[in-house]
Image (tube, rainbow, N blue to C red; front, side, top):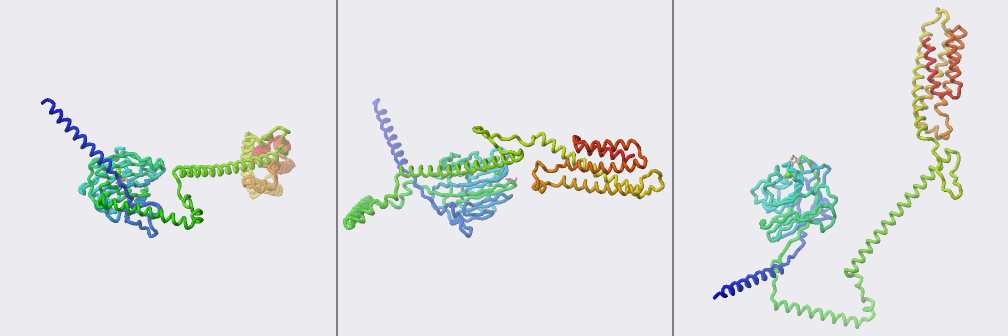
Length: 544
Ligand code: MAN
Ligand code: CA
Ligand code: CA
């Protein structure tokens, strides 16, 4: 009596185990059959035809299709566009791979794109990422812009709607989403991808972040079970921009229908008798074919020998293919290396050219060639002018220009004063300079004026012509010119003083003129200083 329940329980346990096993075996044998659905797909090249149409699809709004992609919404404010399948799908389970690029120059972009599976195609003027609100079906939304300022965008989410709900754009659909994941899909080096699978009422979304071009780099975004979607929906893609804008480009949408074994076989089941018959027929056909081949070989022994292995080249084993690919890869590396080598050679050639040019310039400047002692490497000659000298030279140059400007001003002043004297008529005043003397002075000053103007013009103008005519080192420098000018002025001055002396001028003026001559004739006084002193003297004289 005591062992009865135990026997019963062991029996029921065995039955349970058997049932589970049966179920397991059944589910294992239920393999998934996949079929590429070209009528629900688009991809480059020739995505759009010459007339702009995309076979089996229709698009509208601001969407533009090219051979390479569909731009759903361009990076302009308040744009919306979409592309939809022309016909509803005729399979229950599917997998859709969408490759897209969302790009924009801003750190933040907007508004995003959406993949749809809905009972009706959306309106191109719709309010939800370029499609209609209150849709019936599924929307997988790639929301770039953080409207609710929760710092949780860009975000990928699935929203299922039965045609009654309005999408809450202001809070990024936060309370309406079925599931989602925080993923950045903007401005990636490679196109980003999403693989949306709907199989046996389980919705799975995988995401590829576009950091690589590797097919295997999808990662799970979410999986949701017990999702019931209406049958016979349309696939669609849409995008929209708002106050901010990104380009929303879709490169491909590839649809694969998924079928279970029962589905795949449904309606095509054949009896085992028929199966046997077919298999027998096939075997007989194979035998017949072999027999015919044998006969042909016997009849045409030469031709057969020639043609043996004719198609061998057309096939390759996995190993052969791998080796071929490795060889191709190596070949490409070699090509790149060769190019690199060439480039490096070119660079070295150019460099040595520049070096020899430089050497030639140095040796010309120093008046000697680069001569290395036997067995010793050639030494680079010292620069003909040091940085310090250069700075000194340029500051001197500036000083010369300034001084000449001052001189010019002064001369104009003198000319003005002499004009006034002439016009004022000094006939009455005893000891005043005669008009003849003044006109001589004015002529002299005019000559000086012209000379100064000439010098200043030459100083301010770029000197290419002058340099082309004479070597840079032995050209007449501005300082020399100024010295000559100074001498000229000095002589004029002396002449004027001489005239004044004759008429009884003061001893101070005589002394000044002597000093002036002395300064000008002394070779060791810098011309700029000489010019400055000269200026001062002029000032003194003119004031007196
Ligand atoms: C504006 C509005 C929003 C939009 C953002 C970002 O604020 O147009 O609807 O989401 O810009 O484009
Ligand atoms: Ca948003
Ligand atoms: Ca948000």
